[in-house]
Length: 257
Image 1 (cartoon, rainbow, N blue to C red):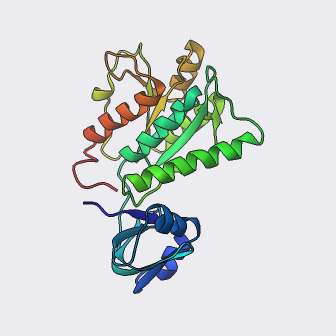
Image 2 (tube, rainbow, N blue to C red):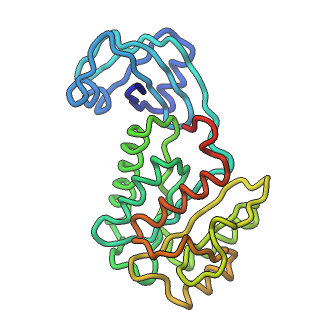
């Protein structure tokens, strides 16, 4: 049975790395002691969200501090190529569902996309709160999946900004795949160069992606692909596509974190 995972900050992890013990503080300690009811003597993993993992046994557990006697310290490399989800904002929390499952599947980054047909709109003071909510969802999903890497949620992008981002990715050798039901090429057959640093999957909103918007994204460098014979909801299209990519790229051939 896999061990429960708790997260500490990079600085706290680095300061303790290589030592005999590690303290989990604040809300994470409260969650461990009060919600998960972790007690002395239990084995746990503590990660820093950037690949660092400490495995050990709980010495003491209180609401404000959980002390772990560490038996092993390790550093886990990120997946290569990295998987990125570009998720259009959607109503009914379907974008958040996609983010949660995509995190469990192994994405490294998530980009919220304010597509032209997105019903949900992030603007003004709502933006930092929405980004923080997505980051919290990614953190919880990463812990559920026992990952040592927590995906980074970036600032939302308009279609114009996303086009600029796609051009930057292409210049750096990354591959951007745009899911579209009318595409002739299949995601399962999309060529991925051996030295590709990252593969990004762009998923539209429930209303689909308009012709002009699609043309702009393709002109920026995105590869138009279809996922399969069926039209999936925006909450499931991204995770389904990421599962295809993870299998094709052999990211699940070894134990991934």
